Image (cartoon, rainbow, N blue to C red; front, side, top):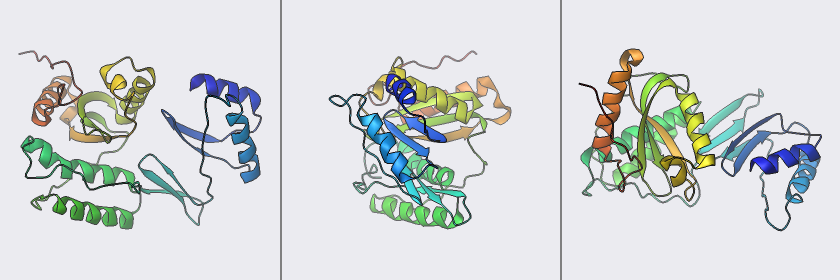
Length: 252
């Protein structure tokens, strides 16, 4: 993809002002009008006409990127909402299944955190949480409530997190003392290079979600490692059930 981009920028004089990419999915802001964007896409598709074909969606008000719906407000701001694919099927693990109980309990907690991190408006947050509650009740959840005490954002440091593969439901637990956005950016690079077990896993899978499991007090490395170890075993994320491959070694 990098070679395609380098060649594209050589050919084009008009470019998007902002752009995000995850593997083969791109999102951007185009302030130059629809006609120039269509010309831009024609140039892109003519770079490798027999090998690559790029499709696009252009809209002045609403666009989706992965599991996020970006909406332009009347005041010119951008709001974000949860995007659910039309092909979505309510296939969360049934609460009566024989999976680890911690994994089953974490579904509600993790999905609620995901929705909270995506929705910028309170009304959208409440609507999506109600839908989640309904979907989980159909999968046998007990209705137990989880209170999210920590204010967690992309700038939060010192967390244990879960990467959940939406395509196959396998999971990976990790920890970081950096800002969450920095660790997320590092994983995205792994997905492109495919030099790590996590990166190799997403060679065949495309969609994932990152969920914070625990915020570590004072960002202590030892406590982070202990918490990571705890969650790996709670959620059983070692291969072949999950994606983790190395046991966490703790100093006594």
